[in-house]
Image 1 (cartoon, rainbow, N blue to C red):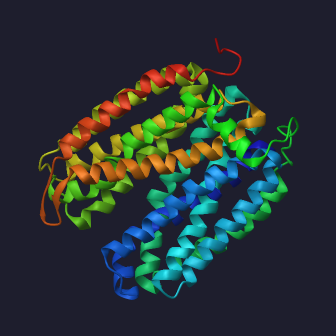
Image 2 (cartoon, rainbow, N blue to C red; image 1 turned 90 degrees about the vertical axis):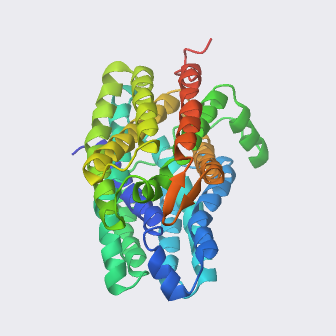
Length: 396
């Protein structure tokens, strides 16, 4: 494996830890209810603390990320992520757990965006799609391996143990990052602006606006549906709670296979044609999932798997499309802002879907089809915005 491959492996491994850290809180909910004595409203803050902290930190980091070397920034952010993860595992009460989730989100959210910037710096454009696809495969591996193992550890030894294990696994990866990555300082130079001016420039720079709009549209459309798939499957589609892990393992396995394939297609055919194809497939699968009657596991699992894989494909292709449009000297700050937009748009989509839906909790989940139609209508506008995201040097 060459140096670029080692860098990609290190990024993907840390991305796996960050993804499991983010996802594992939700299935550990019953243990948190019993151990910490919290209610559903308090649990919602445990979950959302990460997202809101990530969104705010991303905007703040955008002003400084392009002023330092990528390796130095990556190591500092990794250390913050692992410190927050360790604090989650050791938190003795609800208040400290929420504070630890804020710390983890503040570093983990920015770290994800910086990872894509590093991929864009290390890999030439003709190899970038495949590299991005392999980096995003960390999500699939987290779904298939990390989360089930984390749930088993939590049930056996206590809810804090999965976080302690993740923190321990991340320590050698920090050393590997310091060893494998060059300083990556080629983006440094030029005029040093004040942080607020730097942030405003990142938000308003002409090539950034359509890219940020594309990210917001995709995440809003996806997360108006995704958080409620489990509830709809149990309430409407004839899937039991015990069968839900099978649904997500199936989706993770298919995504694990499909994301590298999408990356190769991007390298061969370009990001925009691939994006248009996978967005169209994702729109169809969203309508199917949100209108699914009581069909049982045999039908529901492959349907959800296709939707998860198509959603991952549109993220791979959109990231490849966006990173090709951003100047290297601006890439770190932009990807930080882009990560913030992802988190905030995801939260808004979730809230919007929740305001429309009724039922659940033993009753049929009503108006999920309406949410699906809204999600598809929003998502299809991304086809126009994607056409406005142009590779560097091709702007009119």
